[in-house]
Amino acid sequence: MKPFKSFLILACLMVLLAACAPMATSETVLQQTEEYEPLRFVTSFTIKSLDPVSQGFWLAEYGVAELLMQYRDDGNHYPWLLNSIENVDDLTWVLTLREGLTFQNGKPVDEEAVLAVINRQMELSSSAQSSIPEGTVFEITAPLEITVKTLEPYPRLIPTLASESVFPIYDVEAVEAVGENFGELAGTGFYTGPFSVVSLDDQALILERNENYWAGRPKLQGVEVRFVSDAQARILAVQNGEADICNYPPTEAKSVVDATDGVNFVYGWPSSGGFRAILNTQESPFDDPAVRKAFNRAIDYAVLANDVMDGVVKQATGFFPEWVPFSIQNQVTDLEQAKQLLDEAGWVVGDDGIREKDGERLSIIMLIYPQQPDLVPISEAIQAQVLEAGIEVEIQLVDSIFDALTDESTVWDVGVTSGGSLSFGGSPEQSLLTYDHSEAYRNWAGHTNPELDALIDELAVTFDSEKRTEILKEFQRVRVEEDPQQFFLTFHTTRFIVNDNYQDYHPGMALYFVHYLTTPGEYETPTFEDN
Image (cartoon, rainbow, N blue to C red):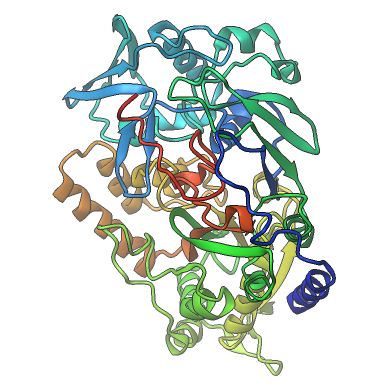
């Protein structure tokens, strides 16, 4: 398979942008008023359904669904729909809801409504089932109060309650009334957030202002989210005035956008995510730890972050991003060591520079997906880098990386996903239990490492911060230095292309793209402390 010609994409984008007269100038920037026109997003990911179990996380990102706790970009957790959370002892937590909460349809959000959500999610949601320890009991113990009792210490309850895919709070009665016809939920006001669903189809999600939002009247009249897979088309939608904000822009567009009037490339906010490489250890060549180590060390992570991605992302220097206090920087590039590891493992360089062993060519298949356009230049760079060690890479584009990796008929050696070493709620152990544990439901390669499993299991029941740091550092040593079956290529920062109206746009942590204070102009942080 020939390498992707990403430079052609960039060249086409330059021509198209140059051909479009700027639509947004300083004269068209909206003036401060009491309310604003709907905010228009274009995004690469399609929201497929209003089913809150399988698709509810998207609604949290666009101001429709809300959670019990919120993870913010200062690295701390705060009550959201909760008024407070108390850790009574290692096995007991008390959750107290805010007074006066209602769904968008006016029904009260009380202890019974929240318990109904918890029970339904625990029955139907794989995210909830994998996040909450077996035997955990949620019970109503007072008005607006739910007590959580676990069979073993569960220190990650708070980040779990801040995870968008676990317990988004919705009106269970309204959801169950439509059966499997989730499209009928449009217009029912079954969430709590500042914007409610008007319609959803394969083209767009249309939202309107929740006039009775509990934290205050939203300043935007509504939100429109259009699904546009092509990155050039999303950028041009902002350029020609059809959209305000482009999500997931390719980094290679930054230099062109910076030189174009009316559009702005904004970036740099902390993110829990990163591009994760997952190696298939069930098949040769990555069933050999030496080959995994060689592949890991042949990649130049500084070049990926600073040159290929133009400094928009953070370099992956370890398994966790550097801004995490327990991170250690032990992921290194060492081409000579990579070659030595392959030599010792019996892989001999052939006449064309590609290594061979027992008649097998050291050729691997790397899967990427179109919803993350940055993976094209990243994969091309890796292809060139590891070739110097004698490793051949064939890049294959798949429609859905999750579908491809779960399909037993897919032939693959490396799958690249966008999934952080921290959960969206800020929990390291939740991410490790999701991807890295032998029993993790996203351990698509079926890889096992008893030493790592023991560390993850211990972390999951440890409250003491010093002990947790000790466990996490040992995990990083083993995962990066001994068994790099999964590792990070880059760490994300959140970035967008926006028009001049939204040049001061600032998202919230964990992909909260819009909230009730979002407007053109100066950014305001929703804290909810005074509500």
